[in-house]
Length: 123
Length: 108
Image (cartoon, rainbow over all chains, first blue to last red; front, side):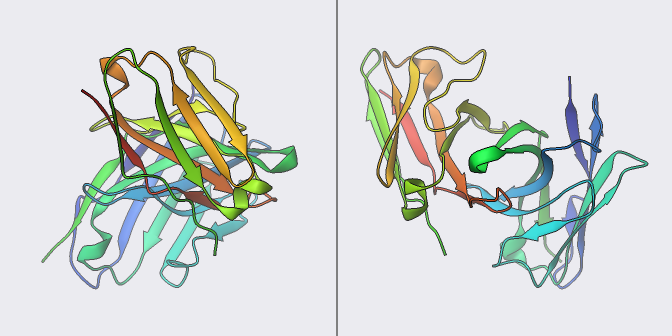
């Protein structure tokens, strides 16, 4: 069964870069029709899609975060990563990685999620 | 940019029917998906392609679509159904994702 696990610092200082990695086990990241996404959820608030990457390296970002976000993939390690620059307290959130199925006719939904990791931005 | 609008909260008594709506222009052309999230947990897919139920999801969960509004219906609500529910859609190529603001379902 496919599993995803987020890892990275739980505390980041304002203006610095948030870096997280998602390790995929029980399946290959080199899979057709699957995108690998990052989603975040500020405490007590809703879900916000950050962006996604295909195993080929193609990336897609939320326009509201695009200037600060980079998602990359390391197929040799079966991992994908998130970097968010110039963070502020507003970036404090639980960050989830997830696998999204994309198929014909615009089908696109999240099948598996990591457990999420809380990142606090504070000095 | 496209938006999905959900009511902030819905309350029902056990055994009653809960209906949670999600509205947005993109829903006229794109499928909607529904996720249940309980405190401290990752979201769980409960409906896909507007009305399909994944394996393992209780039959009391159903979905429907009409124009620019989709509805998640939970028939015979149980206490364990309490949580937050999010609708999700995307663009025609599947490269972008949007979530609704979420609805907190309270079982009285």
